[in-house]
Length: 572
Image 1 (cartoon, rainbow, N blue to C red):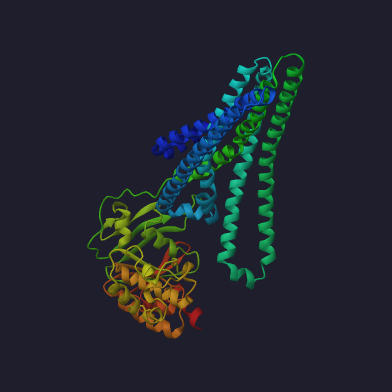
Image 2 (cartoon, rainbow, N blue to C red):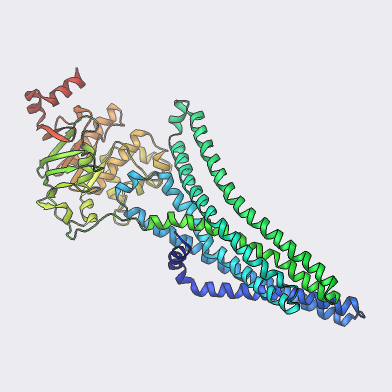
């Protein structure tokens, strides 16, 4: 991403605040102009008060002027900084809002391909760097640029002969900045990438802390983390050194200019003490804004590298939602017609699947790991689209349905329960918090056998349960997930080993609740324990993405095929 593209993308977020940016710039220009008058005031003070006869009235006048200039300049700068901070934080907020909105609309394939830490880093580290460019860099540029112009103009006004050295040195400074820009941007890009890796590693070790400890993997993970932060340190060092070489070069050039001023003003030019002091003061004051202009290049290159990441996320193709029909009054008849699918072009996970599920029927999918059970569910929820074939609900291809309309009809309970850092009520009424009353929430908890333990919590249904339900036991988390599915009251129910985290006594109670919940619903069960699917109307056996058998429990046992083999293996 080049300067032009970066500025163009950033301006989209700055455009609503152009008025504030103009005001901010004007305030900083006023502050800078006033500050730029100090060398002339200083020179006149020397000539009028210290070289000639001293005068109390004149001293008071100059003291008052100097105080007024400094006070006004400071107030203008304060106003400018406040407005700049407002714009910067508003841009951060808008960028994060857009990024989060895009995250919620991205296809599941995106999250399969991108580590969590990398995505988190985009919303935390990268967006801050861009916002820095939005106001802070701009403000510093305005201040330094105006200051440099004022001081150079003043220097040429006072003595064009002494100021000729500036014309010689400025192109050299520009060349030094240009040569270092590419290196700083490349290193900044690498820092951003490794920061994403670090965030991902931190996320893994925080969420998997117990696993790391039980396997004594602390040293292994520490070594990985140290290698990563060592690489970040090296890349940041490269950025800092490129900037430092620039500053060293500029300092040497400024030193040459200052020494030439001292020599030529003392030997060839006639200047009063006040004129020399004002010229030399202006020359000295030129050092700071010149350095600032050079230093701006460093955060700018970091911001451009971050912009590639942030705007890359915003530009990601969101989940396709081309369906127009609303799925209502669902009976629940589901058909897979010659469906094939693969996560990559090289290999299919499902091959020519034909599956007929009647309305209100309970169908169990069984088979070894990798046989395609979960993929069938993901296709039904349209997280992915088949490479070939079609999936229909009540005779209509699911591609014709609007996504929200389709997914509203599906409730899901996974063995890997995902809860949110919210209240019990918020988790049960997920996605429906504004429309679901307390009575329905409590009733769902009762059916899922969760009511008693929830009532025992300090704030009952308003109790916060921690990140991913860490304040609850595994069985309690599972029961909340079941309550969530019950509360959604969808005509299609998907259960992926929904009772796997429960003890035997609780499992019997929850299984009874699930049996009740399944009435008048089309239910698909992904099963690893065959004891949980014996009551299913139909059992579908999958192997390497193909249906090998289907029928009732007794029919498949009588057929003495693959299901019978799996059953004997589990119970003998």
